[in-house]
Image (cartoon, rainbow, N blue to C red; front, side, top):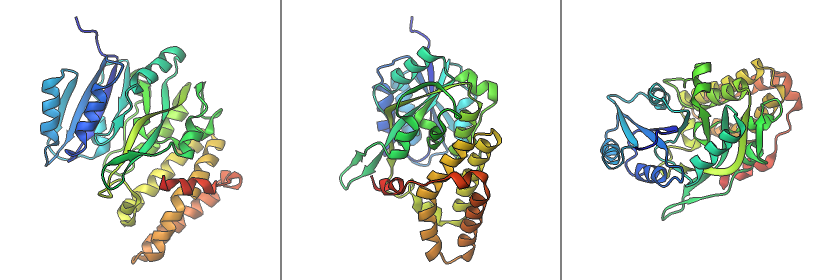
Length: 316
């Protein structure tokens, strides 16, 4: 008899036929075998749905959920969350890849510590002209995940707040259920608020320095800051930054608020200011300046010391 799965991986995707086979292969290659994957086809118009169906036909651990219309990443993830019935859950975007030991390492850590979730490091995978090549762990990711810490909190380790992505974490399903965690829908940048809710609501979490995910920065520009030149995208982005800070601030995690401000000033603000200088709509510059004024008004702003090396590392 096949042992019951221990972890459910939620794998959303829309029109990613060129990339999703690598993501699915990275699941099949896991050294931890007791997983199942919910493949959420978010209204694809290419062969993504066919690839999902073929994977499910070949491996019973894959299960396909088809959304008739594109609902967005937040809603697609939530559709998967509603179906999780395993002790652990995690996320893998359909154009990214897991390292072979990712699930074994993260589940093993949680089994040993009893923490609510574990957050790991990750690397970017960029197109180099002939294919995708992985870079180094970036310094803000290293600051969040290294050295390894067990059963810590956001008050003890405020720099953990820099690791905002859903797909570098593995959680106890009971933790998500107990706190009613779901992703915001109909907006971009779904991860930020949820990540800070996880950090502030956890009794304890772990961080590990292992790079468990290769995050594909796609050559078509869909994953890079070019999208932020659009005013509606900028507004979603700033709303996510505000929301994440608000969660930390409401929890009284002032040092974590300072850490987020430092990172935002070093990494997020300079490219936004550069776009604002050239943007034809003066509303763009006004939105950025209002956001900066809000940051300056926060008590934690006085303690912020942005690291200029963080911005330089964006080119890795």
